[in-house]
Length: 239
Image (cartoon, rainbow, N blue to C red; front, side):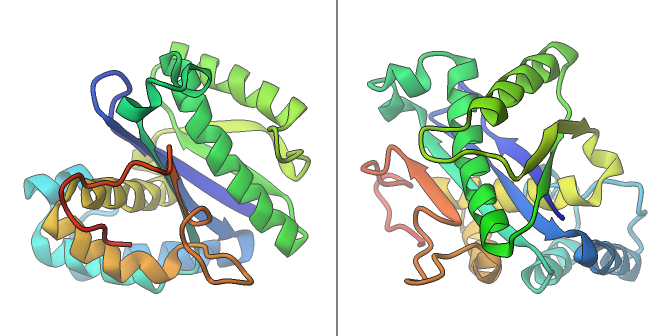
């Protein structure tokens, strides 16, 4: 079995860029990932129960030496990254995908779930999806949407390898969700032009899924939608 830990970056309706994604881990690799994470925190005297998230790195709450060490550990960790970047400004012309907050989130979730399902298909495996819990009403809405998505499938994929519904939990109790937060937060910040994030993302790139035949990253481990809009605007793209 594979576990996909999901997190998001950006606020729909308040931010031009919304990002959803995370890390897919084989059940057999979970203990190795957890060991790497806890060993890194212990080496820097950081309490295991205290979160390490991108916001803390960006604001300096997480010491730079610890941030560097955590990213270095993730760069060789046993997981696969999938991140979807939605340009909500360009998406205003595509109401079927961006017509409401729920539709926008659903568009991102659809793309991520499709890519996770392709991984499961290639591995002849099944998978669970775990997301960071938000507010109760948001969680209930997300569960309903995901239930309908897995029942009917997407326009391109029948999601018959996804086990049951969406599982939601608090990130401070989950190593997987904190790893997802870092991957998604770093990717989103790099897309916005952050030099710190761009440096970290270069180290994480080997963990992103690529096409098995062509080795392409775009559209596989990293999905931009609409694809025609480059980010960060006015700058060269990192990948």
